[in-house]
Length: 103
Image: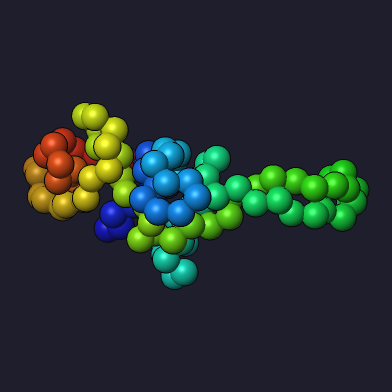
């Protein structure tokens, strides 16, 4: 089971977006990276195709998982993730508050 999953709300710990929050769009465990909505935006030059206009577009670039922390469900501050078994299922919980993390 992964500590950070698609749909989780995360806080950026380092870099130009430090302190900002966003939702995980995609996790790439092989690369150890994740795409977070509105975080680590980069400009890319795009050729015109049948489907898209030409021009400069803004899109999210992958950010390393080590630079992300789950936002605590109680107060929204960064927290570490722990695992425990409840009712025969392995669940994630926030170490800061002890609350279960949805997902």
